Image 1: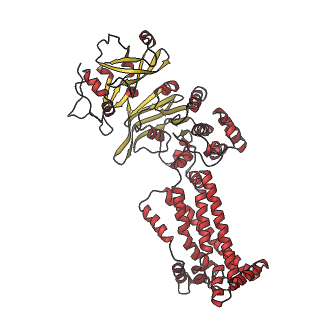
Image 2 (image 1 turned 120 degrees about the vertical axis):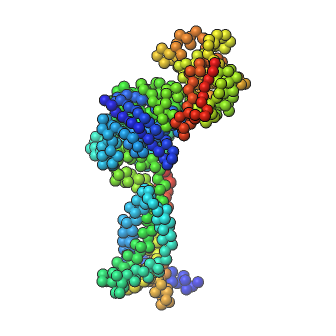
Image 3 (image 1 turned 45 degrees about the horizontal axis):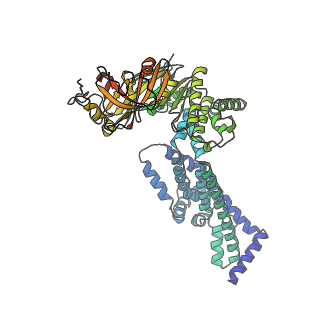
Length: 233
Length: 360
């Protein structure tokens, strides 16, 4: 117990003293996770929207596939992307392996089904009358799509926040594709695993506190958005 | 000018034909009521007229132009027509932004937007609600804002799907007044669906009747499912009086022309040559120019009103002689030629094996 309280006390000191190594790791984590969330959202929201509003053969199959991909293990993604980005891989010439970009590629694959899948359910829940109302008031296809997306905005935003929470806390992709290089690709989760292996708990605990704080902030944001959502309907 | 011309328009959902209109024309600057029972295709027709749904087949002309069902060609035409749903939905923003939606879409200047929005809200008596969240309004208020939202687009045609359904009396009166004012003031054609023949009479110059997806004769006002009449004992009462030799199948409909129903005060001995006599209670009497529209509740075998409402239209003088007032029990009489048998949705023609005939 003393060990834990001592580690916590030292971790807080580290946080308060603005330790450069700690904050650089936090910065790398946030930068990589935000980038992958942005890219996945830019791809996943239109994809989910199209799947939700279009009627096509095999639609149920696509939705089932998206739902299945929600459970894709990070190490499996890490392995496949590693095979692609390694020197012998199809994209080896890009030299992305063990860079933040490689982590972003893996994380985008991880959360794309999340954003697309939850966008499908958010848009599908929107009343058909919104589409009809926008159209009868003179909206073209794009303006109608924007009106529907606007009505589904809280559900979609919730999915984006959940996806960000997923990538910031994952370790498999960051470890396998980033290589945990100090000052370059070391993220909060990979640093924590390393410090644990070294038996150095202070930095690990400090990073754990930051990670929990980020997760808490994400959850509070999600709750606030869901609150707006509930009030607005 | 001819507003709509429909020829051989069909709307099918799989094997089910929701709408089958041989020919229908609607003129500009008129108010037209669309009547018919639930499931008769009123909403489907309104969606087609609003160019929101493409008919399965047929020719559809709008303002003299054959409509090409391609989005690019459709958009300019669709912007001349606005449909207000039976239960309108509001975008989750303020009343002001909802009413301004059509104007924003059309690229109207911001200053003009606000002026038009306030004018339209004022017209429906909702100007004090501009800053309110639109999705928190009551049903009647929502209906009024939806009309304001439609008016802001200055459409040539305003389509209203049962504008007073599910709305309280106060809002019903307001909505009816708005429609009435629009008909007389604006250069706008209005087409609304309703179940209420009195409302149709009050607000429109022309009435279109739909039955089982097809245009029907105006007698649809008194259109009953034979099965329902049998369940209430009315068919038995009619056959006991000896007017029908064979009764239509339970799945068919019987229509009674309101203008061919005669009303006699109870105990009046002279029923003339009419072959049907039904006891009924007078529920409502309305003046309609030189005629009186009487709404009656047909009595069952026990002499109580059974909830089957019949409308009769008679001359004011004729009604005056009967001395009847609402609440009285009267005798109804009509000849067999006042009745028409309509068959169910699935059969366009009467079944050959069981022709319907009456004998006196």
